[in-house]
Length: 69
Image 1 (cartoon, rainbow, N blue to C red):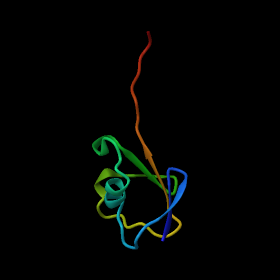
Image 2 (cartoon, rainbow, N blue to C red):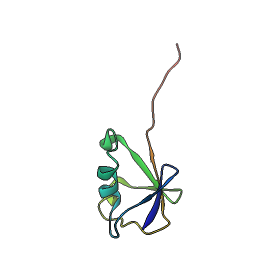
Image 3 (cartoon, one colour):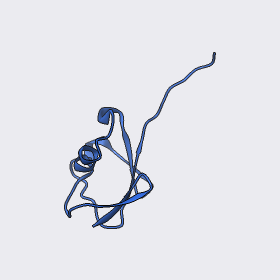
């Protein structure tokens, strides 16, 4: 099945979850990543339960703090 990951179409086996995808994509700092699935934020507790479907779009986001100089 084809899934768009970070803007790139990729081929994956049927039945993978968001948690599987994070591992397969070797996401840096997975404990800090935020995931959107089809432009909807996904709760971390759903990563293991959410099975991806062909045509899904997934983005991995990191929120950075900053301050003034």
